[in-house]
Image (tube, rainbow, N blue to C red; front, side, top):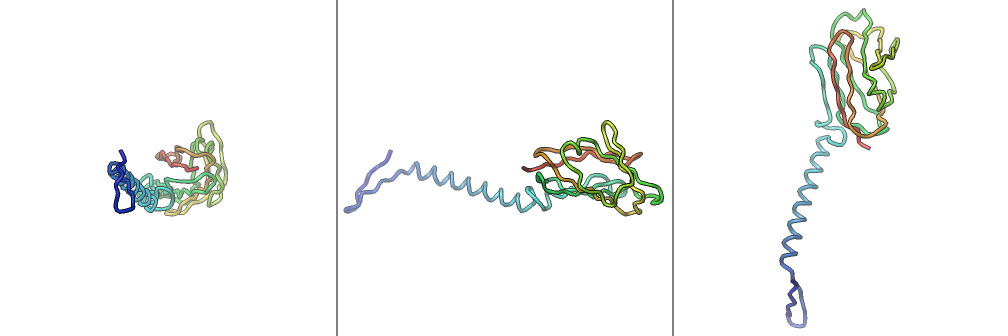
Length: 166
């Protein structure tokens, strides 16, 4: 209830319950804003420590990638094949779910061949030096969670997940 008070010729109204509630709401909103800014700085919405991810083991087959991407923006996967003989061609496979939700822009180095199977595509690279890597550049087409498998033929399969922002 609003109480009207007189101070000389001035009439003032005060609602202490409203003022307390208003202060609480502002304090909560300010705290949420600080949390939002902190998460953005850490990489929740782009480049930063929360965004960088690695799957696999450094001593074997592993992939470095970004956990968060944007629709129609490009994202890179740095694929490190298992160290071994570089004379033999490297055969990597990618599940079709990646191709359903995104467009592959480029492979570096250029693959020698691509075989399409029912549940995956097998990409053959003529030569990847020991300690070298393959870069897959893709452009997500739809927002949401994107899960797919990636691996080296005859080796482990890595299940990767990233979130695509609109």
